[in-house]
Length: 91
Image (cartoon, rainbow, N blue to C red; front, side, top):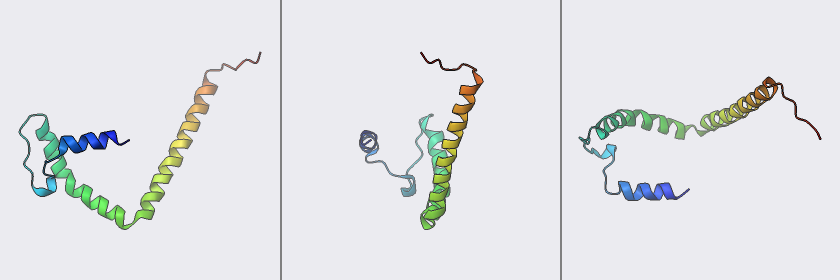
């Protein structure tokens, strides 16, 4: 769990963030990503500040999604086991 942040720290060390006015890299693979991140950063910051001001609705939504995923998994498992028509045999 700590390997990826450690590698990211060493790979990204010394780079300016978008909020510090870093330039868009000219390499053809990096340029679209840098432009997209630069456009999304103000929206992300606004959403993050809003979520931090009101944590209870965010937590409720997260737990709601967790419960919904359990229900979907249970229904999908029930649907697949009955669809095959095969019954387990007892020896």
